[in-house]
Length: 369
Image (cartoon, rainbow, N blue to C red; front, top):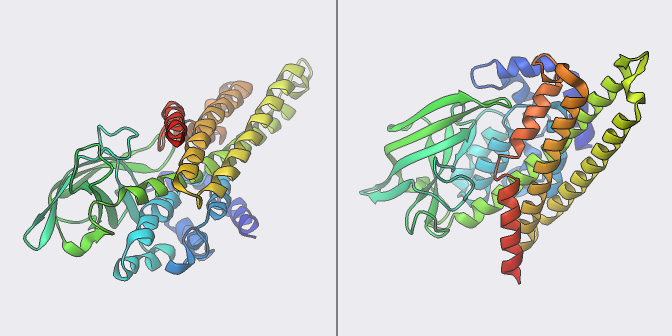
């Protein structure tokens, strides 16, 4: 029911023109579409029931994000519901979780500021420092490529309260208002739509109750939420692959050469068949990961890395094949395939690329023994 409702809604309101309108706004999103998604209960579906949501399980995430990817939606569901909002739901006190009602109703924006200029894909590499000073905590450091950071009213910021820069222990999370003194941002557009920003924290002081969860113990929650984010973008990529494939099928049926549709040429039929097999393999991986999100850490993380590696490889293959079979039209901004191809390529670089997750999967498997 969730899938059918979301698909009907997006097919009615989310055209290529609407996407371009969203991307042309100040923060790369449509406020009207965001509120409509919230009214439909889509944001609620990504939160657990104990915080006022309707689910938040692996299959809820996969269902919503496959439809988001199928339509090419650029509104920030991942940032609000899976990452920042999810961490508040997992670790927050009742007072801290109060903001989630506004998030689920579409009235409040969040962002997760974790990555840093030199961290690359290492989740535990955090140099931003948080030190207790008087009756509060002072943060200094820099965060990089914070998606939805400029539009957010509240930031979930990771900072080190103990340990070496690459240690898993000693990482803490803090809720910081986006207009806090000493916090500055520099926004820029992303190649696949929307905006990200660099965040500088210079003597940003927050009260003690800004700490989210226990001091120094945030890494397990961050790792779990990153796996959920991998499930989300993998499902989104699956939806984008389906749309790219369908656009290509339609083009092959209508584009003629030598007096016949080019889809009649056997070599192109073989390429489309190979692509379909790869997409179905990607679908199986997404479903496996959705089922593994509630399982023990070693199972969850191995599935996350295996899925992300596969999705990165298949997504790039689908993007390249579809553009090649379209020819020059596939690269034009006015044609919708261009957006889906860019998104598929960029998904590979979110939360670790294919090489990173291949190495991580090997390391996790060896550690398991």
